[in-house]
Amino acid sequence: MTTVVPTQESQDPESQGGLREGALHMFDTIIMAFAGSAPAYSLAATTPLLIGAAGLYGPAALLWCAIPMLGIAIAFSYLGKLDVHAGASYSWVARALHPALGFISGWSLVVSATIFMVAGSLPAGQYTLSLFSHTAADNTWACIGVGAFVFLVMAALVLRGVTITARAQWIMTGIEVAILVVFGIAALIHGGDAASFQWSWLWGWGHFGGMSGFAGAALIAAFYFWGWDVTANLSEETHESEKNSGLGGLIGVVGVFLLFEIFTIAVNMMFTAHQVQHSDNLLGDLGNMVAGNWAGKTLVFAVVLSTIATLETTLIQVTRTLFAMGRDRTIPSIFGVAHRRWLTPWFAVVVVTVVSLVLFVASTKLGGVSTIMGDAITAIGLQICIYYALAGIAVVVAYRKVVFTSVKSAILVGLWPALGAVFMIFLLIQSCFGPNRLSGAEMGIGFGAVALGLIPMAYYWLSGSPWFRNPGPRLDAVAETVTEVGL
Image (tube, rainbow, N blue to C red; front, side, top):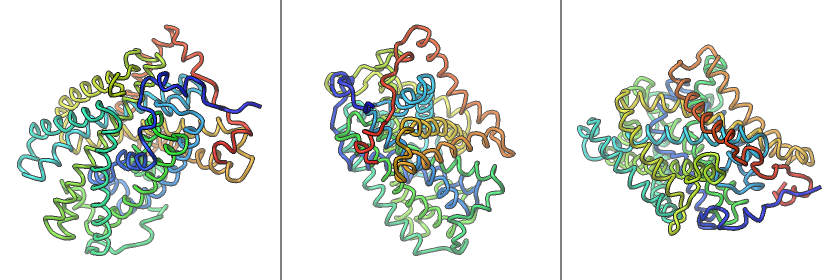
């Protein structure tokens, strides 16, 4: 039997495309995972949608989504031990399942990240302006201007290199998480008059109005967590990536889950559903109730930091994925070129920045901030399910020969990732065919953006791109690999 070992190409920094090898360490990856999930931003932007779908049982939706999501994080961790690759699921799925599925996995991340950057830039401007003037925050063009400026500054940091990006994330995400911990605990202690805490909020399975109702709430909950997997796309730039990238993602999922639960419970206690649905600044209103106007401003400041931080990590994810695809010549090869000095995928950064800004300005013609974000979150939720499900299946296939060698391996590379994959597929089916299925427009945005990827895939496949015939040695863990990957 043979073991899965890195090829000479994967060990050579130059063959990695010139990315800065070993620039990040374990705590950097943890910070990146927190920043990617954007706890403050997710709470501010998504809580009204979650409560609209699940009522008081939003905490339960988050819990039941966190369990399979952790299975997907475990899948990413163990796949990353076998294949250190900037494309992450793009490469893993191709080498474990099929190149076409790998391409679709990578493309799903590309379009979900692009949609988010388009939709997230407007709130970045709105929340920033709200710190100074509510009138300015209601001015769409002012929000566009500030949002575009923030996006350009963030893109410049990503272009300059992963080291400076990590330092910026330490500052922004460190302050954000500290604010959330302090005010989250204060909010629970303060309580409110809207409702008394009930343990059923945490695991009330029977309160979603059937499986379709649960699927709708869980699809929104999945958006809360999305982004932790940026650690996988940074694997080529991470020291001891086989360990640190996966561990950072796992800690990030658990950490943001705790923050989400604290604030969702606090919102249940302090606001009625009507108040939540009609609040333009939910975290700011929560801070006002806990400790006055200064607290509200502080939480809004946390949302601003969170929005900028998650736009940055999202740009990292999409550009590293495009970089890997360009390097493999499954899209134009110029995407796979790194800057000689900064060691970043400069062309991918420039193209994604320009496209996102153009779409950002155009999207403001489609409706208000809440309308744009609601449609975007639904579409992104569908795309997340696609590439997370494929990764969950890929790890089971890659480790199929060792999955029954111990109880630990059966759980970690078998049962739990498989549960995560089945959960994601369930959400897709219920969203498309359940009684409360999504509208045609929502599914059109979600699946239509993914379907666009069939065009470059068909072109480069028919043009003879060697990657579609041989994306690399098959991911096939065998008995000798068990000790190497910690099973």
